[in-house]
Length: 258
Ligand SMILES: NC(=O)c1ccc[n+]([C@@H]2O[C@H](COP(=O)([O-])OP(=O)(O)OC[C@H]3O[C@@H](n4cnc5c(N)ncnc54)[C@H](OP(=O)(O)O)[C@@H]3O)[C@@H](O)[C@H]2O)c1
Image 1 (spheres, rainbow, N blue to C red):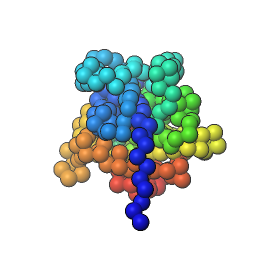
Image 2 (cartoon, helix red, strand yellow; image 1 turned 180 degrees about the vertical axis):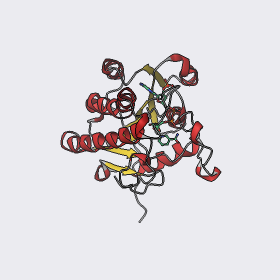
Image 3 (tube, rainbow, N blue to C red; image 1 turned 60 degrees about the vertical axis):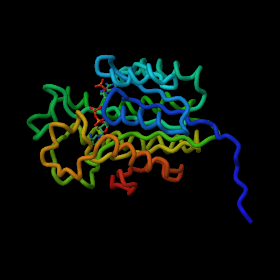
Image 4 (tube, helix red, strand yellow; image 1 turned 135 degrees about the horizontal axis):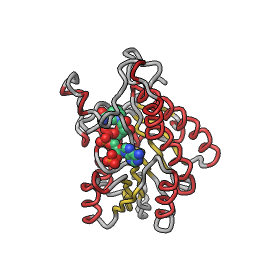
């Protein structure tokens, strides 16, 4: 007997990409726009000057809406969520792609001598605190009767168990803090919004502004294009269920050690 297929139209998936101005975040926006399952895509940017690609895409795609957000400013996160709520009652996919490793004089520390309080705080605010604030404000949009997913792009260098080389104090510690914040939020979400999965994803070394100064020693087959990374992470995200909530995954779907 042939299986009866449910041909009723499925509701469109609505997505939010935080940190969509360039790099992996902009790559997510492009692949979400090309995905037939996706309805509206929201993409946040910090300043128009570095978001020309995103803003041009939004001109061409009425279902892409750009929203200004600086994750170090909680009010701007709350304002963006308040702009989403009247248009879209439910979000199904959220990806936090914000991150900083270097910026001018701000460079990853090679030794303890280079640690400064200011630089540590900057890493923590951008890479960890921002994600926790986004998850705090998103609950009403992720809590509904369909499955929803929040994924934060973490990094394998944030794994305590995998740290054999040292260095990069602020980046490593901020990613470890990100992992703990999202793991803890996953436990709370499991009680308050059991259909939501929260996950941490390592993208693999990807050819973006962030990795550019550190690509010299990376063999070509281990340096992914943004398109490849996003396709791999989308496949991992598609396979996640609430039973996976609070876990840390590599780009190939394998679990990573904390
Ligand atoms: N590329 C890799 O090899 C690699 C490896 C492991 C993990 N990751 C992680 O992957 C994520 C994406 O990185 P990427 O490689 O795509 O780097 P990227 O091209 O430098 O993109 C970083 C994004 O973060 C945004 N951002 C930085 N500070 C912000 C703030 N205060 N408020 C809002 N947005 C802010 C940037 O916006 P602006 O345009 O305004 O600066 C940009 O959109 C990061 O979390 C990174 O740590 C990357």
